[in-house]
Length: 181
Image 1 (cartoon, helix red, strand yellow):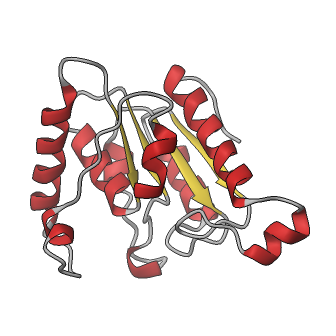
Image 2: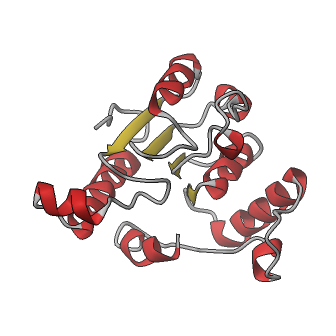
Image 3: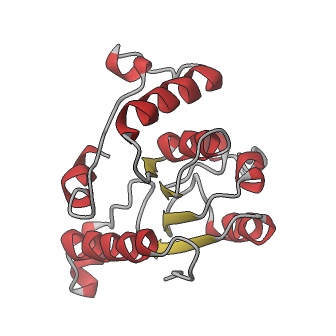
């Protein structure tokens, strides 16, 4: 998410944070309740009585979804949602998505093995919350498109990222309105 901090700041104030395990250099994430508590604490510190949209990459997006069940936020944006635990299609992390009522934008690469688009589409149809999808053609879990594909299509990663930012900007101005792209 650090590479997105400056880009996102063009849309509003951005408060970034790291979970304890990351700051301490540990590879294994903390237990889910500890991650949620850390995310809530960062939200409460950053909120300052104004509307908040949580944006997170992978696990940060997943934990943001959990936090939205407990705290009032306007919307959640998930970059590379980790729908399949360890890439295993039988280990879905979809319960929180089905419980959400907060509008959600998924930004997903077509090459993301942690979130096959067919599975995500199935889950999205069963979600209560308004939810939208911005697809990054050729994007991996980090939304990076392979250099060969960029060259073939005459694209640059910067142009891909600009389209992602445009999709987010459109979503955050009207979180409940259709923005699939």
